[in-house]
Amino acid sequence: MSKINGILGAGAIVLALAGATMAEGPGADTVVATVNGTEITLGHMLALRGGLPPEYRTLPDDVLFDGILEQLIQQTALAKIGEDRMTQRDTISLEVQRRAYLSNSLLAYTAERAVTEEAVMEAYEAKYAGVEPREYHAAHILVETQEEAQAIKDEIEAGADFAEVAKAKSSDGAATNGGDLGWFQLTDMVEPFAEAVAAMEEGALAGPVETRYGFHVVKLMETRIAEAPTIDDVREELEGEIRQQAVEARVTETLENAAIERMVEGIDPAILKDETILGN
Image (cartoon, rainbow, N blue to C red; front, side):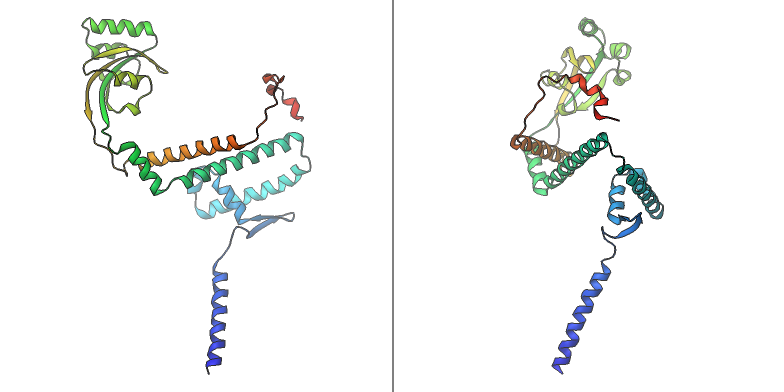
């Protein structure tokens, strides 16, 4: 009796394993179509879907499935003809695309692996622990030239009302509010605007301060100590910084360890305009 039970038990295990295999369903290697003998797989469809703009991914599942499959069928049929007439330009272009894809794939992998709860916590503590972030309330007048900015500063120092001058002469959106920028932290502003504000005393006037936007005359109204944000408030920002740092570190390390030899001596940079080098 025990022997029969053993056989039945083994049979049940085999059936269970077979059921598990069958339940796995389609995979990346599942063939969904062939074109002149060339297979199109579910993996190909998923890869194509991954490169679509976000708005396409909101289409109904059946519409997107059929559309992707038809596109792959079309591409496969045309690609076969294209292979038979490959030029030097085609070969080089495919190699450039391959290198770009592999490079981007590696950097994406590097960025995502860098974001861990421990890394986020360390970044948060480094940026905010024991730090009392200061906020600044300032106004500015933005003009195109240093001469205009200096004349405006002189005018205000002579008694003109800052807000009225801003409304009349400033070229940015804050002009309608008398140049008032509201409360901000220095990290919200471009340099050297932020540097100039940090060096000012409340009620002071500074300028001209040049940035990529033009020349600023700045008035600092007041400052205050802000409450440090919670980790959840800045998680997205911290994760972005962690990814960026990881990518930069990977690129730096890779280049430092690569055997790079540049052989461009005597080559005119203008040669890149000559596309006949690639042939037809």
